[in-house]
Image 1 (tube, chains in turn green, blue):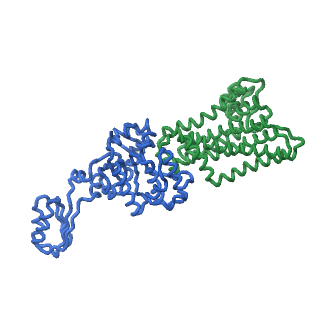
Image 2 (cartoon, each protein chain N blue to C red):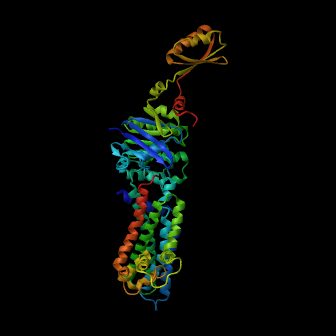
Image 3 (tube, rainbow over the protein chains, first blue to last red):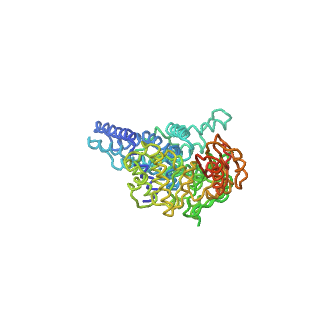
Length: 279
Length: 301
């Protein structure tokens, strides 16, 4: 077997051997059952996109939190424990360790989000509520895409950190910046400083508008708008609103490019940092 | 082709120089012991061979592969017992070995390896729960997995009881007999003496000596020791012995004469004592490796 996949499989099975993760898995299952039950008990008034929309919204938060907390220690923790030394004494490259771990964690988190949304859809359907199959599939796929972003950020952080303390601080930073939307505060702060330390008036300049739309959850939302527009509401709590008109930077193709960059770049930057590091 | 070829390697960590212009060649099939006090740079040297650490200047090759540019090919042929290792996830001893065999793309029976390193009963327990010595044995087992051409063992007997240390020596010897090159670091001198073809002594990042143990003894000008215990020391005996060729020192400790001398002179000295009085006991020893080590590394570290 390919050594990258050997690392991936090990990472995935490590999680299965970890009893603590069963609690997290149970939480995902419960959330899925809860959503399905709610939709099912309002079967007459529910629409087919309700379960996918609520499921995606729940996964945007719960899934992202899980992705960060299950991933941020995955490389730096092994570096601290000496496990990385053992792996890198066997014929694994650092590339295989980083990307293999990324894929393993991603598979794990996506299994949880997919399971949760699928269970919600199945229970709702059993209870007689309408469930749109295409919307459910879209919710599963976009949740997975969002998970890929957060696993990439967290594994990149983990690979690039010299010790577990810094990685933990970084993980906390990820929560603040992306889930609590500090990201959007950056252009405000920059404009405040540029404006001589007083609040600027007038409309946001273009760069500030672009900055808001390249936030990963906003970028995912902008892709969804081109595929399954009814689902975009799911991410309203985590992504800034859309500007007037339809500038290029809110178009789905632009969003897709941004999402891809968010998936590829963070883990790669972390890898590049680790590649030249002394263990 | 040499198994290990280190050329002009220096390594600095910030202001600290861990290795200073190290040149070292280990031939294929050799058992090479790497000696030095703690912090001398032994582990750094091993880390450079495995590409865990990059040299500040210089380069190293293992079986002709550059250790930085071709680290995976190096490690495909190498079994490693690293320093500061940790268990792989929550796997059992057996799954550790299966994992190592798979990584090395080798066939092999994990149980046979468990037997060989002496933890046959512990294969199905999680390695997190192993004792230090059992972990050390398992790591040796992982190093042996796939019959490597080179074994790199960093302080292999750390945490082992005397039986474990003995088994470690036997395994090193068996691997050497099979033609495996063995490179290991240690500060336990008896083990080095027992199994090594050649030793290198590292002190404060510099290689201060490389030779066979006999060669080191000669080079250090170290001589043997002879202790003769008598019922009493007759007058004039000390002077007689001092005048013999090859004698470097004579000291009296109670009724024991401690003579530093070349081995060839020992017989005549014993004869002198025998003629002069009643000999109760004779002990003879070569310069200990410890004396050698101290003479090369300054002792006080």
